[in-house]
Image 1 (cartoon, rainbow, N blue to C red):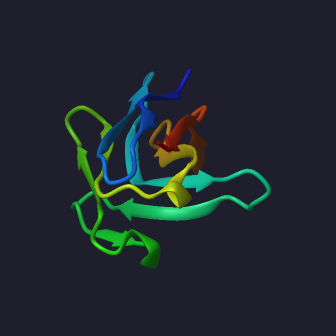
Image 2: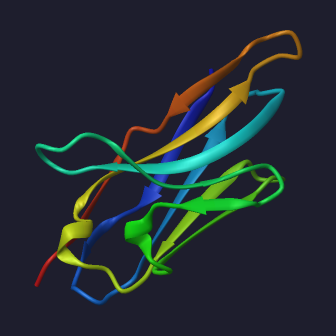
Amino acid sequence: QIQLVESGGGLVQPGGSLPLSCKVSGISFSVGAMGWYRQAPGNQRELVATVNFYNTSTYADFTKGRFTISRDNDKNTVYLQMNSLKPEDTAVYYCNAEIREKPISPTRAYWGQGTQVTVST
C-alpha cells in the first residue's frame, strides 16, 4: 500500500526555520511530480511549491525565496526547508505526489496526512 509519510512541523517563533520531509512508502513503479500544499483554518488548500523528477521547482509567490523544495529520487522523499517564517505561514502542510503504482497503472495523486506548522511567539 502506497503511503506518504510526513515528518517535521511543530511550533517555531517568527523568523525561525523549520524543515519538513515526506517519504513515499510502499511499492511504486514511478514517482513523478511532488509538492507541498498548505491549509489554514477557514481557507482553501493552496499550493506552496512543486518539484519534478529532474528537480525543477516552482513556488507560490508568498514563499518569496524563503522556502526551498527539493527531492531525493533514490529515497522517494521530498523536502521543504522553510526559513524566515511568519505567523501567516501557520497552517497544516500536506505533501503530494503523482505516483504510478505499476507500469500499466494510471498516474494517481497521493496525499500525506498533514503536519501542523505553527509560527507564534
